[in-house]
Every structure is written in C-alpha cells, then in structure tokens.
Length: 269
Ligand SMILES: [Zn+2]
Image 1 (cartoon, helix red, strand yellow):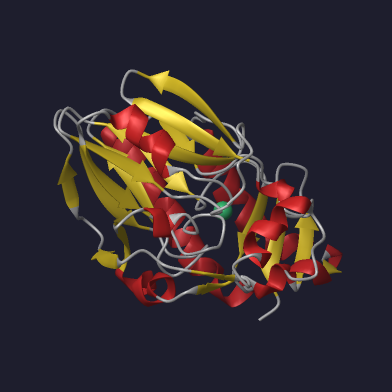
Image 2: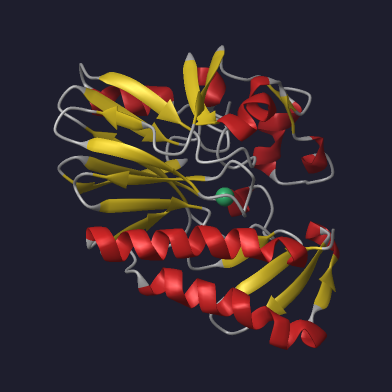
C-alpha cells in the first residue's frame, strides 16, 4: 500500500463524528466526485465506520487511534470500488444483503490497468485483484444498531446500486451514501429511474417526519440540507425533457446530461 502520509484528510466534525476524506481523482481525473467521505461515528461503547475507501493507503491504524477502547463496526454503503476496497484491513464488514456476494469475493479492478497514475501501482502490485474481508455480514432495511448513546437505523435505498443503504441516527444525521450528493450522479438505465425516485421520496418523507435537517453524503460537500434530496428528485424527473440533449460518454459507457445543478451519467443498458 502507499505510504503517502497525507493520503487521508481527517477532520473532527462533531464530538462523536469524524470525517476521513480520500480523493478518488488520484486514480483517474474522470472520477470527479472528490472527496470520498468516510464517516466514523463514536458511540459511548461502539464506533461505526461507514465505508473503507479505495484501499490505496492503510486506514485501520487511523481508525484504531480515533476509537480508543470502543468496539468497531464496519459498514459498506454499497459495493462500488471507491467504498469497500479497504475491507481487507478489517476482519468483519457489513453490507446490504443484495451485495454480500459482490464484496465476499476478491474485487477485480483490472479496468484500472491502462491508467498511468502513480497511485494505481498500489492495485498493480496486487495484480488488480483486491482481497475481501474475512467475514461479510448482511444488512437489511430497518436493522438497528446501538452504539451507546447513538442508535443507527439502516434504510435500504436501491437505485444507485441494488444494495445501497442510508443510515439514520438518533442524533439527527442522515447519511445518504451515493444515493444523494452534489456532484456527478451515476444513475441506472432510464427504465429503472422509478427505483431511484422511490428511494429519494422515501428519504424526503423520512426527513419531514423526523425533522432531519443534516445530510451527510459519501461524496463532496457536507452537511447538506434536505434541498439536496428535492433538487435531485426534481432533476431526475426532468431528465425526460432533456433526453434529446444526451451525449455519449464512453469512459463510463453512459449517456451524459447536464442540467447545471447536476451532471447525470445514465447507464446505456
Ligand atoms: Zn462513490
């Protein structure tokens, strides 16, 4: 692994919340959603690490120092490469049941083979096959975890991927993973937009009901307010009206549409 000392940027956002940032554009500049936000929640008994990042530099020593004597739970928000590739450093990792299989096997990143960036050598040294954690455990919608003075609830939000999850805390944060952030959006094929919209409207309803105002996405700026969810919902609904403006974007095998608020990459399917 890279021994680059400042690979991660660590900041204490609240007494019980750290953000560990990793720049994914280091791998290739087309990955524009910097930074990836890895969140570390500190309950009185247990800490929860949300994602393990790109697997480019040791993460566990940093986490161990921040959590002190607490037990550690590790979740992946979903299986896409920038979120679970540090799993091997941790013995046991939870992910939604739809994606357990995907992260239980060695993770093939050979699509980075032609990239020339220095950091990609970390993957090349492993022949572009990144080992998994020893144990992968399933999460499902409604699962609850008590960290001691903070409880978290798992909310299944398929669309960005089949097993994407968000987390709601008893302290009033909503972690939206890659389901909602300001930046380039990766969407499934157009026929599956209702799945994405359904997940977003579930979150919008939840925020109203629980009076949640703080949203912590897995990419770019945080915290955001709930306008993020409605902006994204309305933007995706409006894609239909912009459909004749779509351009091919071969790097991601997608169509791209820009509406000034978001740039959408839509799977060609
Ligand atoms: Zn991501």
